[in-house]
Image (cartoon, rainbow, N blue to C red; front, side, top):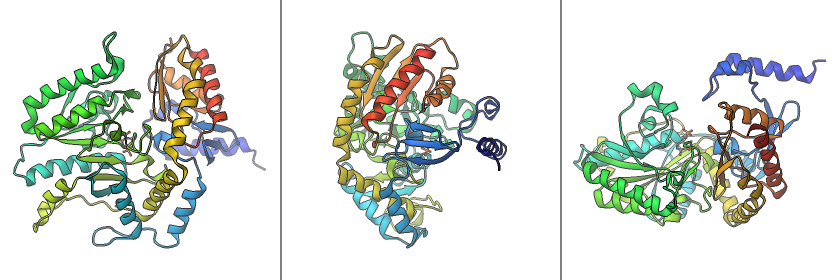
Length: 442
Ligand SMILES: *Cc1c(COP(=O)(O)O)cnc(C)c1O
């Protein structure tokens, strides 16, 4: 009989030998063990020994309605018995059509056409290519530069990195990347003393205007993460920035790309973050939560005007991007089941109540002497911890696991982005245990 502990250590050593883990210095795992997960249920992940962890980050921001959700499971299982996949060039199927129609109904009016990819970075690539190709088809090939915010994150393929401003992800690959400009981020933590988040957002929008005035003839698109810059450390900003950005982009003939890969699907309190600024972007990007965190899928929604610029007799005027798994039926069914849950359970309303509850019970966190900038938008919370530990993120992760929490801080920023099915008892546990972790590391 092999004891259970050895099943765990066996899996860990095989993983370290055969699997190259993402965003990881593999050598670090000489001292920091991997966490072997056997199963998930709701907000909980269970390791091989049956120990549980509260998934406070929704497994890298993808999960919405818990692990092993019975309704999403049933939809995928049903689809498995019908059609697992078919190429989308020259063919079509009910799930991809339904999903496109439903997204068109739900999104800001005018985003009538869905192009499908399999991950967020590809959605960024597709939108950048479409934007530049649009201008080429409209006899303005010189509009081929892109603009993004400081500290922006839009994915890590080479094109996406060209509009990503996180040094860690970019520096090693700088020579491979097209150089695009950035403009100041409206992240309110950078506001002057006494300046409101809104006033600061508008001041940053002035900088955007100055840049567009000077460079619009060469800029195809401005890409933003609406309301929350996730990888920048959950930097939050006032929706007034988006309203002004929309006006300026229209005025200067520049596409506005809303990267809602992380913030779409209800994360910020509305189904799409853009709704809070009452704007319609030219491109809307979705991934992560679109399948409830089940399967890789991304969508680029484009306006009718953009679609029409490609509609012609010549092949080369058409949009040229082929991808094997485009519009995969299983992933589309998972997305349709996810949209069903939104509709059937009035999820956005339930989330408002949950967020209000959490903000009440999180008072001790907000007021903790080592905590700075406690902030919340929808179902995202973040705070900075004043700590003497340079390796705070790693310590916090390890200590969190001991307290049944999956915490994955960015630097000294601790954030919560839980699945929407989290209950009041679990939110209480989250506050209590996080306080213990911070008290140890402050
Ligand atoms: C995660 C993310 C991406 C990239 O998505 P991947 O599926 O990881 O490639 C792009 N933009 C934003 C805002 C994201 O949070």
